[in-house]
Image 1 (cartoon, one colour):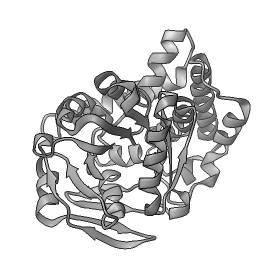
Image 2 (cartoon, rainbow, N blue to C red; image 1 turned 90 degrees about the horizontal axis):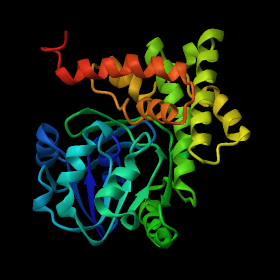
Image 3 (tube, one colour; image 1 turned 60 degrees about the horizontal axis):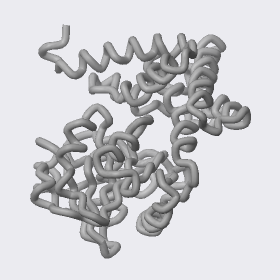
Length: 315
């Protein structure tokens, strides 16, 4: 199978290394210095659980040099969606399957609008690593904590999801085929958006803020706001899902920090628009009050705008 990793950062490069040597033709697609580093020296993943993993794979910043593939694992940062979705057209043929492994919601719809609902799968996941330098990824999660839920937008595309499950299963990551991928995406969003918001606003690790009543209460408010919006969207967000999410901070390790909080600390751009921004937009559309997310979104949109300017130009 020809597989293109569209976005070869903490998720894409990790999957590439895990799939290397399993009979697939894999190409990494990224941009600028990262793509050049991948082409020169390959990928190195330094994993606490798996040790140091290396792979030398073709890499490019030009999808036109690759041509149509069987599978696109789409792991681009959401703030780059517009450019990346347009540029990946040469990868997509009549039978190509596209799986978005991104954070947030709204990504499936953007890809489906460009390439058709039949071709696009949602792949909400917990796993992968963090790109720490061009061509280098740090991986900290234990394998038993990692999973991907793959789901089709159309019932007729379930076979595509099952094929993706079979392709990814040898990596050791749990891969589940789900029937309602939109609800699955939103259930992940409940925890991710709320954890990220509190972590960024407090600039602290989860273990610190979860022990304080005020910030624990803020987390609960965020979860309930996101759940109400998801329910208004017609998704199956029940009380059990909310209660499970309220207990999520206690299941995380003593050093846990969300990827958004880590990006904020490094002065990098934030995926706020697809996470907090989507919740706020949909809340307004349904006439739902979401004051905690309004504040989080405003603060993080400002931080993202400063990061987009770069350190030399930020006010």
